[in-house]
Length: 114
Length: 114
Image 1: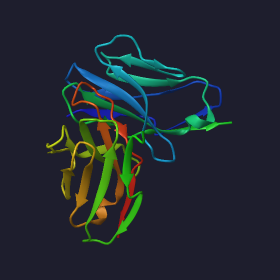
Image 2: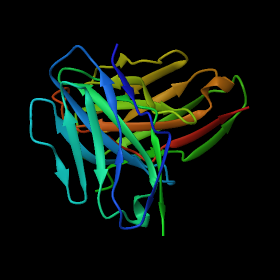
Image 3: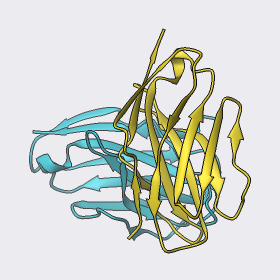
Image 4: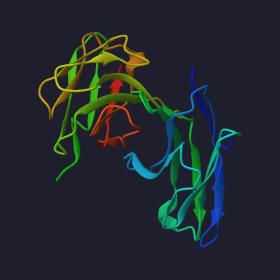
């Protein structure tokens, strides 16, 4: 069974600073996709960034980037120039290429200090 | 373009009562999903519909039924609610089945079973 682990229940960052959220996953498959979702207090699940496992290049979306280490099964999210609006729960998730189920980690609560 | 919509936003049930959670998407997506999120946890898949006319069980299907009414709508039914079903329920949709298609989520339905 696939599992996703986020080892940091809570993180804190100063506004305008950079923070990295960790995620590791366990799978025997080679063809899969990884996601980071943001869940603000409104509870809406918002896609932050997506990575294809077959791509060596790390995905970036504006201030958000990932460090994808396939051999280590690690998928961390870096948020640069943190803003107050970045405060939320962040979930790492995994899906097989031929699959149907997003498998989520337990989440990391990010607090941004002004 | 509203994306994925869910009704109701919040519901209180007594043990043994039944109810149906409604979900609709206007993105012409083929696949739809129902997840639940318990406090402090990531989402877990209850049921999914890979395409119109098909449904299948996810990770935690017990106590639930689903209906894919048409391409747009996918409902989740609790026949006899139990306190263990107190949770936040999310509907999601994706364009295609598999291939790491991004899933887009609705705003969630908060259900409290007394």
